[in-house]
Amino acid sequence: MNLLKKLCETPGIAGYEERIQKVIKEELEKVTDEVKIDKLGNVIGIKKAKKLSGKPAPKKVMIAAHMDEIGFMVSFIDKEGFIRFAPVGGFDPKTLIAQRVVVHGTKDIGGVIGTKPIHILSEEERKKLPKIKDLFIDVGMKKDEVSKVVKPGDFVTLDRNF
Image (cartoon, rainbow, N blue to C red; front, side, top):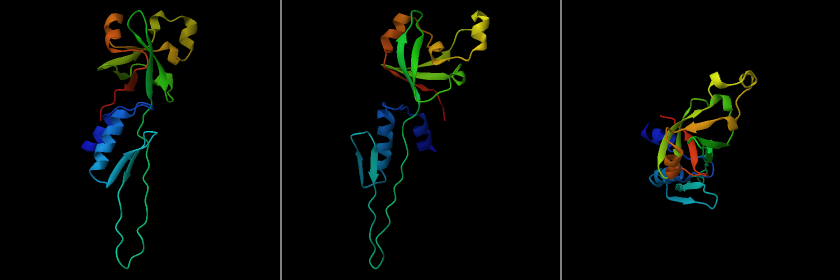
């Protein structure tokens, strides 16, 4: 269970899999004969089978799985200190409002996805579904504070506890 917890809680959006890649490599090194990482970032573990005398050659088995997750990338920080973001992977924006996230800047900081409050939406805006561009991440900091630890290009993951 500890390994499953570790795998579930280690961030790794597509293109930023270094942390989860390290966890998987360390775990595979315990149970395989060889572990390598190819040019695309795939972690490959090889466990050599032993041929027993008088028996046919052992079968080869491949187990494949992805290690990345969907997430977001910081686009910019607005004048109020809210973090604007773009998706990395497919998301339905209406499922994101009030979701807790972790922004992976120079240090990890927690935040929550928000949108314009309903009491200041126009009648027309109330009839529309939210779009990603309407959402922001509130980390409870002013722009100058946020800018010290977060920059465009930093990645964001949903805060999921095991």
